[in-house]
Image (cartoon, rainbow, N blue to C red; front, side, top):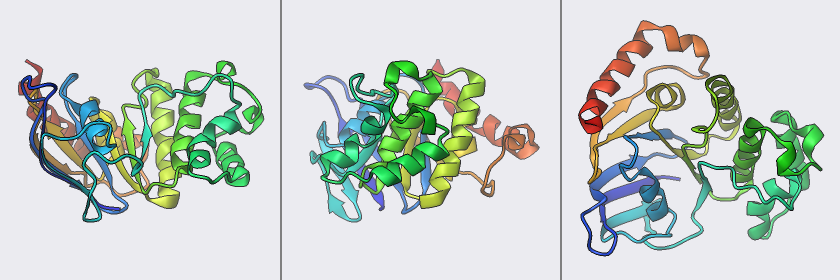
Length: 246
């Protein structure tokens, strides 16, 4: 599933633009990250792609089909896991596919097993740690039928060690199906570790100011964080972001 964003601009009620002439793409099976400062409009971009908002100008398309203002084309994972407290873990991860008329319990149980949540199938969200909740939310996204996954800073609330474990786990699951992923973060390390390509956004009004191809082969390991190549790429991205932070 290929996503294309072409000349997209957006503002709320005639106020100054949040996004301005935004251009980028995500190829089929590619993991692409949007990296930008806080408040640069990254989440607004997801709302536009998901059809919750409609751009003032420009075209959003999936496999060549214009989807401006249309919902139901993406699988979305927000910053917070947003699990329903009255549903069990199993019923929560089945929610997205259930809404699409599909309820594959065996597939859900297999993914929960891989996530180390097999003992929590009948548990409720309040019984899970933060990392467990994020695993469940990601499985819910995988079980949705859409071919494009949009992940909005899903690990930002986790501590550093848990975050790294979640990043490695996400990649291990993603490697099995290679769906197209658009990932949003303000962490340079996270962007480099996870991505095939990275787009750097300016401050508002947000536009793409740099595109970087990540050269590291897959599968990835945490040892790469200490390599010269990783550190050089991190410096390059920081230099691009620095003017947006002032």
